[in-house]
Length: 520
Image (cartoon, rainbow, N blue to C red):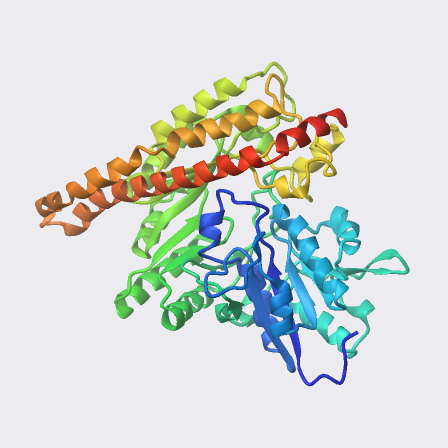
């Protein structure tokens, strides 16, 4: 319980730092997760409560940092003591850091609360014995308010739906909370609550959940939405208050509820025309939406320039195992449509996905690398991301691999390695864990190279040629800009990949992997 004599309380929500430098570090330092902001905004409307968000990956505005990484919480607590510390567990790889910081606050007598995708039922007890007092299960906007009321003594903890806690050393689950449906009633996310962060890319959403049912994904269920008007209001609010120009619509599948999506795109197009401001928007979308030219045209007119597409694999057997409703023979034709309409295409792949029933199918790591490189070249993708399969808690993939006794023990290969860059289970033969990891380094190393530094300069030298497009400046700009942008990113990607490789060599993962194999 909290001190009822206090005039005001403070909730500090912490997004834990990544365990080490990785391929996400660059973008993480320029954005922040939407979930903690939404929860903080909800609490900020409560009487007697102040709230702040500390994103340990984005402390670019005078943030108090530890030499070892992350925020200096001793300093924060001395400057602005919090009564409750909340923790964002949306990324499994950050969980060890989450528990480390949670123990710091708990040892100081601060109430600790955690929530996020990592905390499925199998990990609840782990959390409650690792410095967490209460786990919020599911969406947190309403649950957190009721839980804080209970901590103020206004109601009993047991009546708060959707939480778990320890009582007499036993885990207590309260009745589950119904998923949110009326998103229009929620306040606009207030990014000013994120202390010390410099945000260049703002996350917004319209639809939660996804009905595609991919085996490796934690996001399941019937899609639930807010109105197109509310999403436009979120974007316009950020433009007008933060001068935000770059947005990422975090919906797992942009284009769900097709007609409403098109209506949103048309509204956003008209808004930009009226305000004379051009926005740059990135979305996640299915590859087969290439068949819907009306939707794609509306997206382009709305300023949606970049599409992140989960190709996952050009190997049919792997696509079937993932529950992906795609055919490899259609992929190249589909991506050609996106490119023709002017979209920048970011391709996402999963290397070496474990098959449900391999039958007579067998393919070496070398052959898979060859197939993937060939596909990437033919698809002419602008940027790529190749990861290893991650058996995340709560997914069907993890359940299947656990039943087959193929997952390396977390006691050996800890949660910090659950970021897609490390092998976490025994792969299908004839592959080995070591060859899988080497394979993604080969693919990424081929795509992101030092040579693009010279290509940047060469491309700049050709900029005056845009004069030949005076009759259509926009077309000339697009022809020049796309390769220049890609060369810049690929050279930057080489720097990031080089730093990650250096960090990997210092890491003791290979030793842990050998130990894990002995415990299988």
